[in-house]
Image (cartoon, rainbow over all chains, first blue to last red; front, side, top):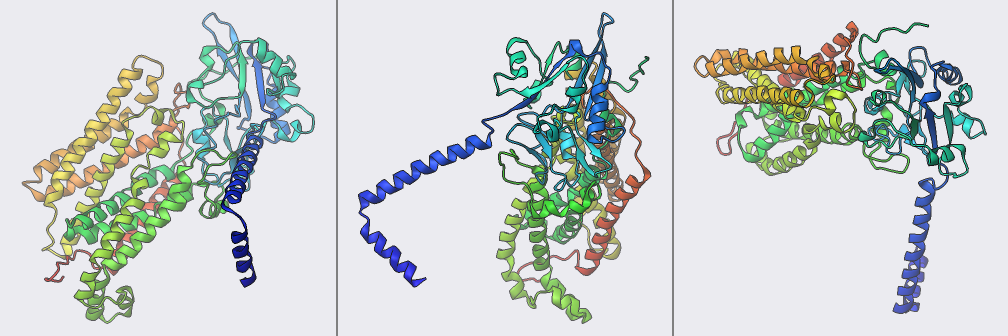
Length: 228
Length: 376
């Protein structure tokens, strides 16, 4: 301990004021650059998973609902994805698939008291079952009704965009099961992805934008009656 | 293929399967929260040197209710074995993975323990000398331990300044509990809560009504043992004012709903609450009228306080339980089935609070007043 103190004293005497300022300035620049790099990495900078629904292609076969339930062991009575049936004024029936929107500004993440609900750098909103206390605050906070208590796991559950599949080169189960291609999944930060190309040339709508949640599910031909 | 009729309106299937997420939590919690306001009033009164005669009653009732606040939320957790994780590692600071600020974590893991600790220390110090006198009177060593060695008036009088500092810190720690309905507005998406701008005023007025009602009932109970303890009168006017404020704020809320949503399909979501609002209004009117009359016939103040407390319970059930029977879309209403066990849980939570009031009320000498130079 004594040796260390004496070394510091010697060092202080050896460095002139100009050198000290130079060193400090260099350190500050290095720190700023490295902090910016860390921030850029944390905010993703790479992938941003999203989904596109072409409502005009959905005919309510429920294949996606069944595939999801089967793939993810969704308990009976709960849904990670579902299809709403709306009858328009002119008698035309429209089917609207819905699920977790993996929002950019997810309202369900903020109230979680333990951090069990979190966002990944690729934009997924996921659950850490080990941390969930089952308080239900996230269920109350979700404007889309996408969360539920899983009675088997004893914690809150939701769509994961099949994160166990997508990082292994597979599509989410619901997308793979859709017989009409009404569901398109991909990375919207990749300009060459199918979803990016569709979004670039198709006018789309998103659900409940007034909540400020910034949902990442894009709809084509979404009827206003379903935007509630 | 045939499709069923959606008789309950437009619901998301997960919400429809389980419309009521918070049951004993919000109801029991929103009533027990009155304890925090009672403590807050007691601290302010101590700092301002007023209502000293009622200080001990407010402290005991307030502390008893405040200590059991978290039992409601804990009783409703689906993964209670993980509950300790919120206390040990609350999510307070935002990060990239967890942006924002969890009010629940802050209230449960920081504000509650802090306020509870300060309140326990305050109560022990406040009652220290009276407990010593009780020790002298009975010879029970428990009172001696609880008196913390404050064995004469001089020492007790010297506690005045530290107690004022403690009361100031305690009132700050209780601040987040006074604005707890903020959790409902800011961090949930319930259709009724999100569209009830008068709710903070309604809750605040009702909490004070609940507190004053409990104090008046407490005074009457104390009066049965100490006939000279006569302190009801100042509270009669407060009951009248606060019940009137509750009536006005409820009517303003109903009017706001009507002007904003009247004639639209969303309006049914609010009419679902009207039967209970009517009942609460009747009870508040009874509280108001009987408090006015009780300025002449003082025993009517019991009816005023009971009507006030009942009105608050009806109104709270309405806003926290019935409001959850409304769909997140605002276009559907169900009559949810509430299992009997939930009522038992609520009764259990209140019972623990009442049990604590009885235990603390029998250990600590309630109803004393200390005046410097004059003593107890």
